[in-house]
Image 1 (cartoon, each protein chain N blue to C red):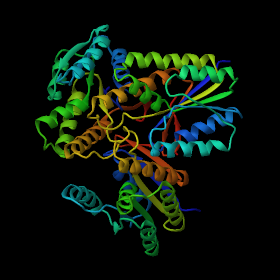
Image 2 (image 1 turned 180 degrees about the vertical axis):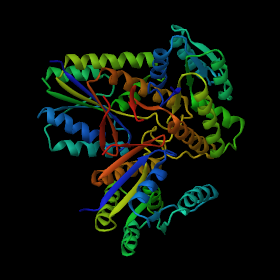
Image 3 (image 1 turned 45 degrees about the vertical axis):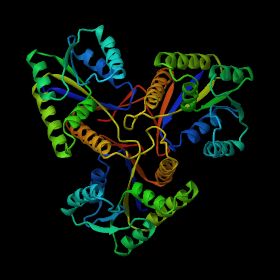
Image 4 (image 1 turned 180 degrees about the horizontal axis):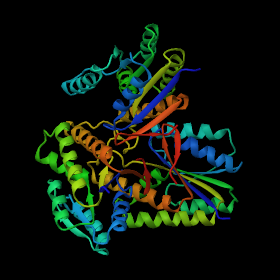
Amino acid sequence: MSNKIILVIGGARSGKSRFSEELVLRADDTPFYIATAPVLDSEMAERVRLHRERRAAANWVTIEEERNLVNAVRLAAAEDAGAVLIDCLTLWINNLLYENPELSETEMTEKSRALVDELRLGPPFSVLVINEVGLGLVPELPLARRFRDLSGRCAQVIASEADEVYFMVAGIPQRIK
Amino acid sequence: MSNKIILVIGGARSGKSRFSEELVLRADDTPFYIATAPVLDSEMAERVRLHRERRAAANWVTIEEERNLVNAVRLAAAEDAGAVLIDCLTLWINNLLYENPELSETEMTEKSRALVDELRLGPPFSVLVINEVGLGLVPELPLARRFRDLSGRCAQVIASEADEVYFMVAGIPQRIK
Amino acid sequence: MSNKIILVIGGARSGKSRFSEELVLRADDTPFYIATAPVLDSEMAERVRLHRERRAAANWVTIEEERNLVNAVRLAAAEDAGAVLIDCLTLWINNLLYENPELSETEMTEKSRALVDELRLGPPFSVLVINEVGLGLVPELPLARRFRDLSGRCAQVIASEADEVYFMVAGIPQRIK
């Protein structure tokens, strides 16, 4: 039987992380957590702290990786991870774009496919979290538009390969695939 | 049998108010309307006027309350309200945040729970309306981010306690709980 | 049997155009494409180029019309179009608002109804694409708020008349009507 890949997409404070953590904890009792958040300021530090507190109760193994997710997945697989949570792809894309403001949709597609391919080879169960950021008005800044396009592209690529996709609204997961 | 609580969430001009009014009117023929909108400018006055016009045809009893919704629900219950519409929680949160820009997610959670608790004791049927505001890009201003987080938190708390939750898109209600 | 009208609504890069093109191509082998995009800058030129490339493989007949969609539908009907794709209503509303910044919701409703009426008389199968833009924070600029309200109003009018409505998330169509 093939590895299982799940995508969880939703807005800010829609309960994505909590739901995803539950999915992973149900799958394996020593889950791996791949964190993409760079701690740039006190606000982000507070968000990261809250996430860490919630995970402290369980036996999470944390891998911090801002850009090279393929490598992070390989690391988890080498440690025989039974289940992996990647939280979140939105910050991953943000980090990639910060490094290369010219990042194209074609490159984003390739990187997203490479990640899914690695997950198919690696841990038996994985959950990926991404924000839906495309349901507001068109942003004024070109870089913001590019980020939005890359994010939507990444979500489409992962969703088309995922076994299950959930759209979160008000903490409620709706299975859409 | 317990009181019924329904949450209606959706975007701008998604038909939230109209659908919610229909739900309440079907439940009781002398419905109560708890309005949270402060009339700050002509644009808001126009929006409020449109909502009032639509309600004029039916026998709505209106309670205007910008912040203390627990008290407003008590007032409605004291008048033996059969059904109550709270429209909307988004402006309630906005009003609370305007009064206290430091309002935390913990406080928001407490206030949301207190409201649901009062609704469980009070009118037999209630509908609460809230905007989904978290599906766009991360806002630049810290206060806007806080508002977005508080809004998402409030929606999660109410949704987890509600008997039914509807997500509105293009005027179409999708029942998600 | 009556003509069929389908509305596809979703965020940026949610796969709306690709899904809509597939629907139209399945319905008829010489589909008509009504394009509303004005080519104002190099970014838009690139987006239009990508859409054109995808359509080049099939036998699309393209009608470019920024504002008068009723006329564009009549043109398609006069050519015995079997299926029509209108992509997208968001740019149509943008073009109308650019011409008349005072465009009201009542006028938007009338224009949306006139379009649906023409589609009922015209081609046997039509798909309309619109962006959901109301699920972020309230925009600061009055014109942006008006655009958002007009967009939501248009989506509601078309959705209420449409035979099928799909909400796109991460490339996955969810049928909501």
